[in-house]
Image 1 (cartoon, rainbow, N blue to C red):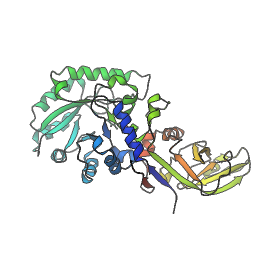
Image 2 (cartoon, rainbow, N blue to C red):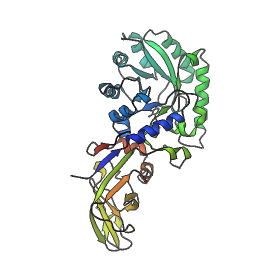
Image 3 (cartoon, protein in one colour):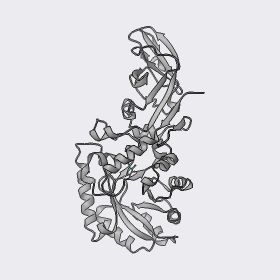
Length: 365
Ligand SMILES: *Cc1c(COP(=O)(O)O)cnc(C)c1O
């Protein structure tokens, strides 16, 4: 059997949710499990978080349906709202809460015949300029929604564009615009909930704490920051990508390794071939030198990533043998670090893991 596998540490997931709770004094963090729980498997993730969570968030109705089919009963926030009018009926039947972010979503809601009125999240564009109503239009939207018999409750939210940049005051400007916009509508604060912070803001922008948070990447034990921050030290990475050494060879100084003869040995070297490649979600554009843990020490990726294999320079690791475990990310090697070597972010690496690689879940207890 091919030894390539993904390990999902559900105990770490629970731990990380508790960390998010401790940093979110207003209500519990909404647990963001879109994109198959950032590639970790949405059903086991949601079931493990279970009753600790009072609201989940996904991108769309299809993702919400998967949760409902697997016995998740909490309200589900739909971050992109809905795409066609007839979805409102399903949204109400499935106890989902759509984001309302443009005027095109209103008319179908006014015309809808629902099993019961729904809670909606009115999204304000405070500077991301991706989704959301203009701050100047907020009051008008609230008024229209208040007059709609399909709406039981109106909450307000916005999203930060730069919360992962610790010295960028765009976050505080967005916060100020959000609070100004929301408080200008009389009676709104007391009636509705407000939500702002993503993981980066939960961890680094305590000024946002007066609003409910939405925790995504941090639940999976991944820091949204490139640089080390104190709050990230509490997180435990949930996903490990591991495989084994399937071949070893000595190459002489001057010899090359891999496709395109891209890597050339500058000294006599020991090369370990590991059974993992871009067909397993390991990034093809990881550069030579990317760390790979073998015997808990750091070998260095040597040459191009193949579909099913990589080569690792293990010259400085003693007594590597065929069959030794290799960890591409996991304990001792943050996926964030690997992502930097591949010019991407950890979000992308974990989210795009292919189904080819089997996932093994440890118990949460
Ligand atoms: C994905 C998402 C989040 C979670 O972001 P993280 O950086 O993963 O914590 C929060 N809010 C919205 C609107 C999102 O789309």
